[in-house]
Image (cartoon, rainbow, N blue to C red; front, top):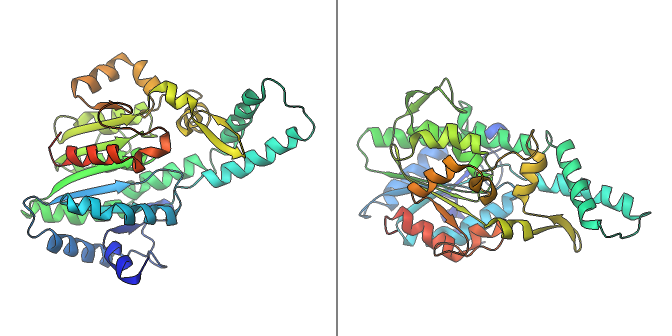
Length: 347
């Protein structure tokens, strides 16, 4: 990436570290003063737009800092050409390398003295789920902590950004706010939705006991979110159809989710998407319902009815998405294009 190109992209990056706080040193540093500068740049860049649309994007939970910046660079022009000004949260969210290295060590240990019997795949899944459960605190729970505390913590980077945007909106700068997140981005955006959309004291969910700004969210768009159904019920659902004007949920069909194989060693891998692993092992209770899995929507009649009533649930393979794997939603042209049309009110 050239220096000129990175300078243009840097206006859109919000770099977050542990506890969701701003990373104030390094190549992708963001200070509180930088946030003010970035918002001024947004206001100037959108000065001639018919509508000032601001999208806050949170990437998934198996994404390195370098890959998050690369994706933002790839998509920046697409969003700007659609008159959507993106802020990309680049946050610490990569437990996968820690987990995968542990699984590899364990699998090697029993492949060294056991033959390849018929239940090899079951053994790989059992090993993966056992180690995922053992590494929960080191990986998934730490990642969820970093995601949520970007808003919950008084110095969280998402909280600082939205406070400045709220100040502009409350002082009569017309801004449309949109949230879009992939995978663990659904965890990231849950308390942020509450902070933005709740009016006054918040009585439930992750922001319980704190105050919200009472602003309108034009859209909330989640691509295969890794948050639980309980998080949806407490952090997203109370605002749907009110301060959240449009909610969109993209998932894989369950058969496709089950068919996915995550590589561990060569052709050996966990049979099922990472959300299956989250549901079965990373969450404290085995088989925790995850919002981004069609399986759990189908088994919750009230949730399915609500999503259908809002025309909010979009299965891959339908008219709005052609993603074939959990990780493909953010690179799927149809998914990105459909989400842009939703934000622009064209779908």
